[in-house]
Length: 102
Image 1: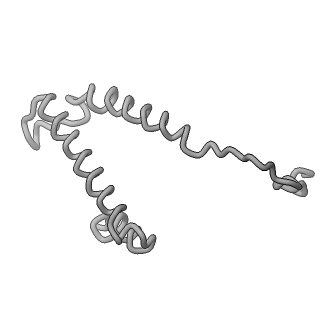
Image 2: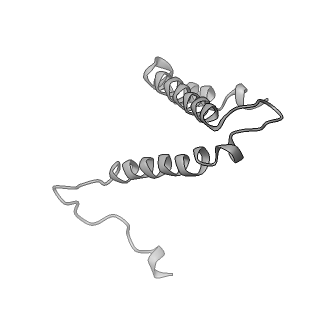
Image 3: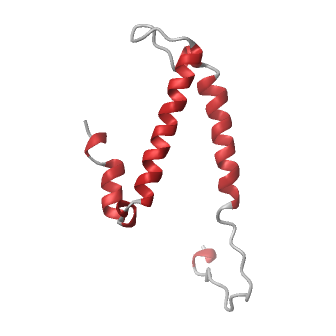
């Protein structure tokens, strides 16, 4: 277990240090939307429509699902930009609070 005792930080940091933080997230978003479209929306009759609850065509179900995604994104972005987003504790309570514990 020699690797446990080796230091993880170099002795001298380079002057120019490039961080690859956000580059891979861009492709992650694209893949997520592609998979959402392929699996969830393409299979709308399987995943989105329950005839015992409401009769919908696949187009109507996709439109409702897409609108729900946009509403959720709008609420999340609004909360991030509000004073609520500056407090990690209150933001966490907002995201995972009582409305998730029913």
